[in-house]
Image 1 (cartoon, helix red, strand yellow):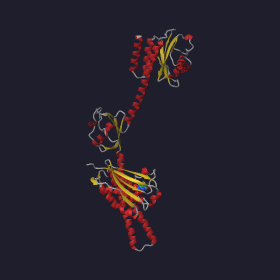
Image 2 (tube, rainbow, N blue to C red; image 1 turned 120 degrees about the vertical axis):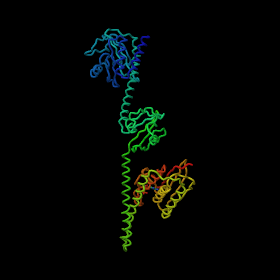
Image 3 (cartoon, rainbow, N blue to C red; image 1 turned 180 degrees about the horizontal axis):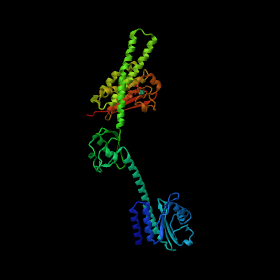
Image 4 (tube, rainbow, N blue to C red; image 1 turned 90 degrees about the vertical axis):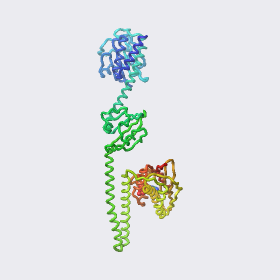
Amino acid sequence: MSEELGLLNRISEELNKDLNPDRMLRRVLNLTVVHFDASTGSIMLFDEQHRVTAFILQQEDLSRARASRIVGTVLTEGFAGWMLKKQQGDIIHDTYQDDRWIVYDNQPYDVRSVIGMPLRRRQRLVGILTLVHDEAHHFKQNNLSLLNAIAGQAAIALENAYLFRQTEQERIKLSAIINGTQDAVLVISPKNELILLNPTAEELLKVNGYDWYNQPITSLTDNKELLKFLSPDAPSTGEVTLTDGRVMWASVTKTSAQDRVTVLRDISSYKELDRMKRRFVIAFTHDLRTPLATVKGYVDLLRMDGPVTELQEEDLVGISTATHAMKSLVEDLLELSRLEQLEHLTAEVIDMQDVIQSSLIYMRPAAKSKRIELIVGEIPTGLMVEGSNVLLTRAISNFLDNAIKYTPRGGQVRLQMNQTNDQANVSVTDNGPGISAKDLPRVFEKFFRTRAEVDESVPGTGLGLSIVKTIVEHHQGEVWVESKPNEGSTFTMSLPLVIE
Ligand code: ADP
């Protein structure tokens, strides 16, 4: 009994030494053959369709082709086939007397007695361990339980080996991706220590050759912007400018182990392209202003130069309308480009009540001339925000301008302001045509205009709401719209309050 336990212990030790399935099984086989004093033995593994995937003989490996030829017959008809069907091990005491034993061509040794045991993995038979002897009646009935225990251990170890191999393959694949990517990848532990930098990150942070593993993130860089994206309360995405001028797009995610993964992608070339595009738009639109003013001047001159016929006057009105539309487009484009280029607002603390008042002064005449009732809700006092009075007035006027422009004569436009938490919310509601659900997500896009029939009759550039959005974002605020076709729309901007 203690000898058997000793064998089991040794087998378990052998199994844990190495996670290569073939080597592992070969060592188990060697130990088992010696312990049972068998002539030799084999382990055969097969897949779910009972196709042989490995055949390990104690001394030699059969070629896969030959193994599957032999085993093909053995598995269906022979002793192995019997064990597969019965799902249990057994002993053949004398192969001459037992028709479960099939003698195949070129069998390299004489076999008179056999003991076999299935290997199970998660209830499924995955292989068979067989020991043979050249004398009949070599194996005893009580050998079966020991062989069963050995097979059990081997199957568990095999399972672990497969899992390990699978994990290892995944690991190799993943590390090839991480090491090969042009993005810098940094992984930081919950203790704020670096646990992974890929080669791009090492190059980017100029830390090649420095032993950064387990070092605090502050030892890596003193770039405050970058440290923000490596810190525990990092925003999930944003831009980082490196000391060498490169601009990176940072995105931060957390793993299930609470490690933080920061990926930095070089977007310098996109930023440069964007800058060039803006410079071009500004230069181009700026240069359009003079010829446009000239056209307008000539239209006035024509009228002054002499009496014009009714037909000619109609043409002149057409030219004036077109130049006016172009002038608005040029001005909106210039304004938007300037706003987008603006890096910092010259901010002052302003009272939102003042902003509302000046917007109303601008927009009241337009509402009046269109017979639109402009209702102003109760405007709370003392809601202070940090930013530009001029720009915020422009943004609110734009909401009002649209509401008046798109609402039919005699309609209603309501301006309101309230406070939620640390935000001032300004909203403009109209009972105009509304916006369809399909168009709603796009109204803040540049040049987007909806419903051709309305838009054709209402002049506009499709830039007004983009300007509003850009202004509000410069104030760290948000804009959104709620609308139902044929009922009306509510445009809202929410701005962070200055808390004293
Ligand atoms: P513009 O008014 O110059 O066309 P905007 O960017 O201000 O450009 O608006 C984009 C589009 O959104 C408009 O063309 C219009 O179709 C729609 N829109 C904006 N405000 C309203 C509103 N109050 N009611 C209905 N549609 C609106």
